[in-house]
Image (cartoon, rainbow, N blue to C red; front, side, top):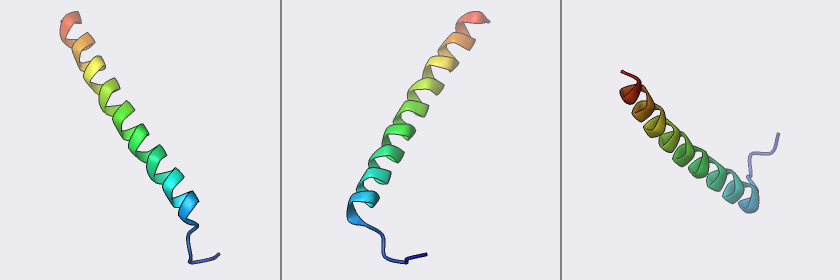
Length: 39
């Protein structure tokens, strides 16, 4: 397994991780809002 990481792969992984984190945050906020309205 190569220890050197391809810059492009690293950029893609970083972008995907940031996008996923943002999506999870938005989903959590929306889910919390729905739960609060249900109560």
